[in-house]
Length: 184
Picture 1 (cartoon, rainbow, N blue to C red):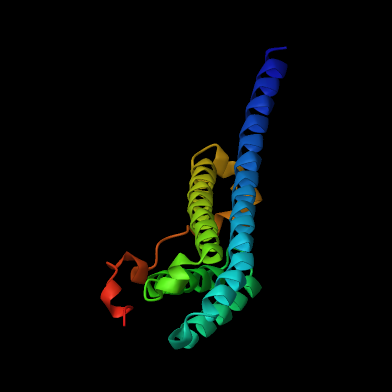
Picture 2: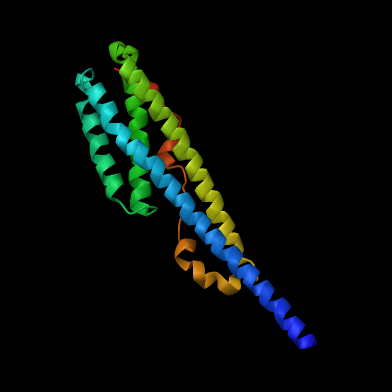
């Protein structure tokens, strides 16, 4: 009888560890999906921004073209991959340059459509940042669960998610912004 009780307690304990790892794995997948949703909003917004800006920004054609290319590259890269993260980091940088360049065009800055589009863009960027923080937190929780005993007994179940990388700020983005380089 005592053996049966010990077996049941151990089985329940192992099951709870197993379910905690599965929940953590699913949280990482959910968080990655949240990032995708926010990036999709950004990708959909970029053509609108560029179309509006194109009417005013005659001297910024190269920047607008590069943003368009990077948007396509970022959209085609597999979710959460190094290629996706690199393309989005570069896109972040170029969109920052774009925002600074808009300052050179008073007519563009005062255009109500552009103001609304830039407000939507800023809100989307805030949502992307929040989604990335949630993802990093979920990944950290998964790694903790999988690396600490007894979760390590079932870590093989989350192998693909454990190989995921954290979203980090690129070295370029860590540098202070020199707005003067973008102003002409």
